Amino acid sequence: MDLSQLEMLVAVAQEKSFSRAADRVHRTQSAVSQAVQRLEAEIGSSLFDRSSRSGTLTDAGRVLYEYALQMLNLRREANAAIQELGTLHRGKITIAANEYTVLHLLPAVAAYRARHPHIALAIKRSLASQIPSEILAREAEIGIVTYRPEQPALTVVPVAKDEIALLVAPGHPLAGRNTVSLRELGAESFLSHNVRSPYRERVVRTFERHRTPMHMAMELPTLEAVRRLVVAGLGVALMPRRAAEAEIARGEIVAIGVREMRFERPVHLVYRSKGLSHAAVAFVQCARELYRASEDGQLHGPRFAHRG
Image (cartoon, rainbow, N blue to C red; front, side):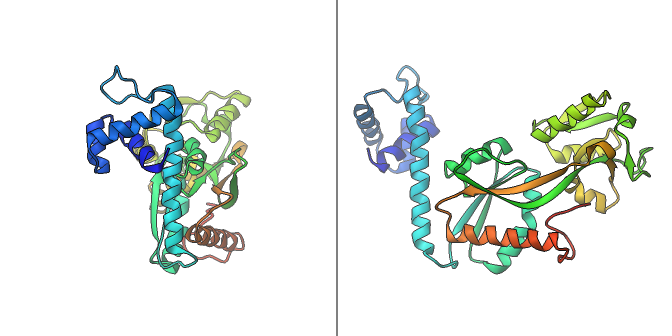
């Protein structure tokens, strides 16, 4: 089993076609078929369902495919590490984030680019629940999440804080209040992001604990859509303040504290405990410095940790 064979396996699985896979790896279709057959002979099991014309993997094929991805990603990282080898004059970092957590990356990205302009940054959109697995599979080098992953092979460092707020339009009856009681929200129509999260569940449980109904008027696919409908006065939302920072600053949305929901939302960088590239180590250091400065009140202008 060698990496070129695994590369062909991955190409067939992703392209769903031996001919397209051959074009992708610049080999003949016969060479790709022979490589797959040698892999099958070596492991003693079929890798593709021959009754399907779409390159469908068998159970054994799916297992080998996942390991092949990790090995190919590791080869790419090794090549990149050798090229940068102790310098920060070249390199690339892939960071996994979602629609919300990427907002906390922006100050760190700006500071890092100012220090290391020759390092390329690729921010990969991912589901928050999948980010730890992507880090371990080497599909990204760093991730940013709002929970502590359980995988022991990951290092977790805090880099920001946020808090839940009630977001309403300026013309809403509650817009003039600094804080409200949760019981006052029983008649409101809530807009929500349709991606489940631990914090969403915590909000729902808080309503249940206070025996207050939570009328979910609409679930939407993006935080931007939620914000736009709040601006239009079509409902209210419970979201982290940072998620609507721009609209709050422009006066399009009013953020109100909810007395029974004064819980902070920590934001963490996660990465593999071993094998981090020099460029990634420098990024983590930059993010931690910004966080310490924000905690000490040393930053002016946009803060990395926004307290609202």
